[in-house]
Image 1 (spheres, rainbow, N blue to C red):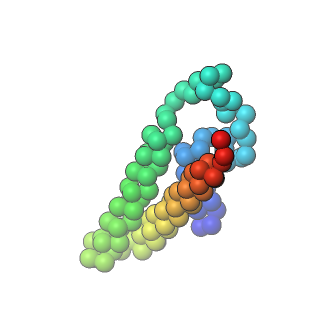
Image 2 (cartoon, rainbow, N blue to C red):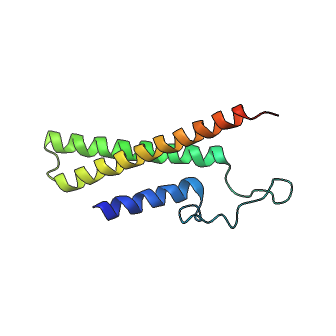
Length: 112
């Protein structure tokens, strides 16, 4: 189960930061906007999609819990997996948010 959670975290990090970020590679990262314009989704679009994915996982976990409690489902194993996926994705989202806030604070401390 720990391996499954690690692969989920890596997939979510790839979705947030790009395919090379998980391995620590930034080979394709643009040097500046004027030299290499960024193509693809913007940071805000990527962040919005990631938040929507976390919300979707939270909703699926809630539905699985409700089905288990009401007796519609007897699948405890998949319910726990759905809950763990939602928990891990939420924790990762919070860590990404913390890093964004830290980066913002660092930029605000810079003197011009």
